[in-house]
Length: 483
Image 1 (cartoon, rainbow, N blue to C red):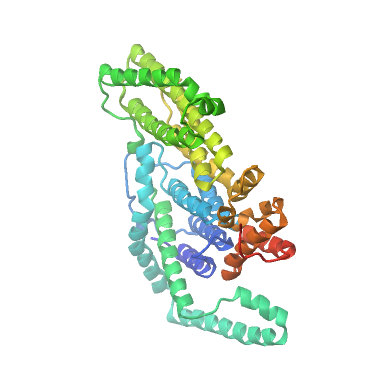
Image 2: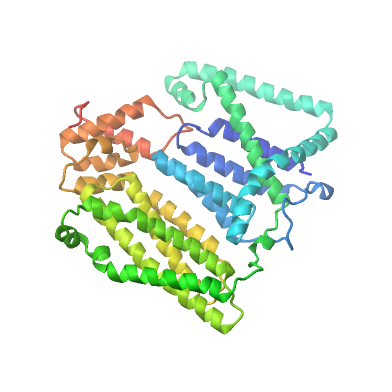
């Protein structure tokens, strides 16, 4: 069962999260919470001896349990993803990073190599959170039983004395100096019913999350049984015939439609009744869906196709390699269509995201081609996920809202000021390329939102802070109407 170090570490991290975590925005508090939780788990694992008899049973046991060094990388990726909210103000981007962090955290805690193992591991942290409550409760009872009542009274008295001293002297210093009072007001939150409820809620959720993480660290699940290759293989013709027909269909599509796929401006201009929107938007989504569906087909074929005989192995390499190569051509077509559409009608968040996803599909197909050399790639799912995480972090580093603003402003066509004004404060530095009237209009729109939702230290964000500075220095004439 957990010892004193684990309980104290989880309690301290929960207190830090309750005070630091902003639930309504991205901010530095998310990074503080992530670091505090990670440190608590590391300290608990390294310093807590606990009791050997109290080690919980793993949630899943399938073979010999074992750890993996790459879990440290997944843990670091989780902290970095949550830290994006410290730099970027785009809420949609932080939500994507937050959702991705749940996957990297499950990989760090539960592991998993195959798609089945990763999917099973993703369900482990929520289950472990509830399994950990009686485990933590037993540890707390043991620690409390060893501690005397006098020690408990001393702890309460120490806390009460500390709070009293800080309150008295903090109030005196605040009344004596206005600058100190302003700094103190930014650090110390207003204590009211809403604040107390938020503290209790965040603290409880943090205890559940870290308790489940500590549970998984103490009793790591072994998913090697799920990572093993499928036991049953299908007959050669049962998979080769459908895939051969599919390869022929892909080849026919790529061959016949080469002018459509890569005709670009010339194809649009020479086709009667065809507009840029019809050309790009009408085909992009179908091609993207076809790419994603092809990855599912490739995964199924790699799982169930027999490979005992040399002829089977050659057939797998030829058919799956041809299908992956042809799909790469379709990926290139989809990206070309989206590039043309963005150049014609402007860039948006959705267009940027789907182009990024399509590029990730292409990278996964290249990995599939590489894996086909040995017909065995236990690394493929994790590398594909790692590539997606790096792509998302790269997008965050590139500042997508600013990219969108700069791209649309560079176009010679009319700029949609309403859309630019709805971008996050990350886009504010790009507005300087506009004429003063339109620039001040966008500064005013973004500045109104920033003034309506001011940041305390928990919600401090580099993008919003920089936008506030630029608007304060460069806004000459507030313009309330954009035209």
